[in-house]
Image (cartoon, rainbow, N blue to C red; front, side, top):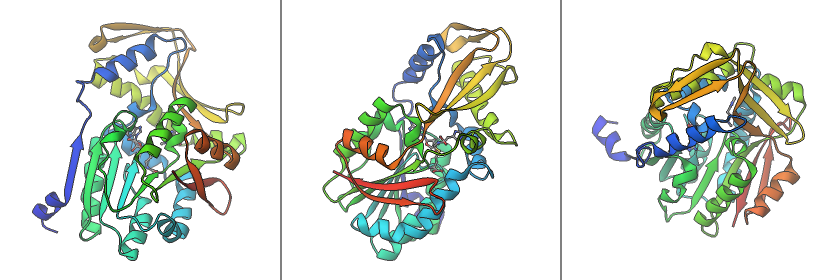
Amino acid sequence: MTPEAATEAIEIDVHLRADGGVTMEREVRLGLTAKPKELAPKYFYDERGSRLFEQITELPEYYPTRAERQILAARSVEIVAAAGEPGTLVELGSGSAAKTRHLLDAMRDAGCLATYVPVDISEEITHATARSLVEEYRGLSVRGLVCDFEQDLERIPNGGDGRLVAFLGGTIGNLYPEPRRRFLTRIGALLEPGDRILLGTDLVKERSRLEAAYDDSEGVTAEFNKNVLLVLNRRLGGDFDPEMFEHVARYDSEAARMDIRLRSLAKQTVRLDGLDLTVRFAAGEEMRTEISSKFTREGLEGVYREAGLRPDGWFTDSAGDYALSLASV
Ligand code: SAH
Ligand code: AVI
């Protein structure tokens, strides 16, 4: 494809700085002045953070990506048929869309593939993904959205030719229960009768495997976690020293979620000029940077019900580690 043709096939709207970064400033200030301190996981994903996540997906300990890929490789034809052979695939938190190719292949082979709508907060990876996909899928139109999907969900274009809304990777697990219910309810409002959501969820399993998946022996997840501090330094004029924090990944079996934190290695003071804020950390103080919820089939069915969605498809990998589920309105 010529560069001109590729440019015509791609349209990406960026809505990150529509509010001049005010949301980030407000959220980070609130998080750093709260007790205990907390940062939202969406701030991991600058260009380096997206690259580190890609490395995580290849780690021996991080099974979710492999499990989801296995399901998609085996069941995408069935999923696309169950979704009514949609013309548009919307993908929330699309990242590199590596596994998404299985769905796109199935849509192309069914003769319905027209439009792919990647929705991601990371601008660089969304552009790179769009460029690769228009090269790989002849005639594909990419209508991407770079935004916070929790804020800008309603900007997703209405395909008119049937939509499958994929939310893969287990990213739904990074939302707390109440925001998750609101988010799924809003997705439901976007769906027309016959459209489907396809949700990837990691399943409850033994602590040792979960904790290893989030604290790998090569230290990639630790780097990914600390990357949020570099993002704050760059975007909010901070002077965090990532070496002064250590990565903590614990499974909270009562809440059925991984609890990811950064622990301050000493008593220290951090300055964020962009917020005109000085933050004090005690030695050993922990700041949560992410949760990653794990589900059971029954629990997830309850989550769907609370959001007014009807589960109508359940697919797991051979080891039963991970599930893809379909739901409709
Ligand atoms: N779907 C891919 C990537 C998962 S990583 C996979 O399964 O491998 C999570 C992705 O969601 C990242 O690409 C990140 O940039 C994006 N993301 C995280 N929070 C987001 C938010 N609030 N709004 C939009 N995208 C977000
Ligand atoms: C993107 N999300 C589903 C990943 C997860 O497993 O919760 C992010 C991640 N955090 C640490 N490792 C991977």
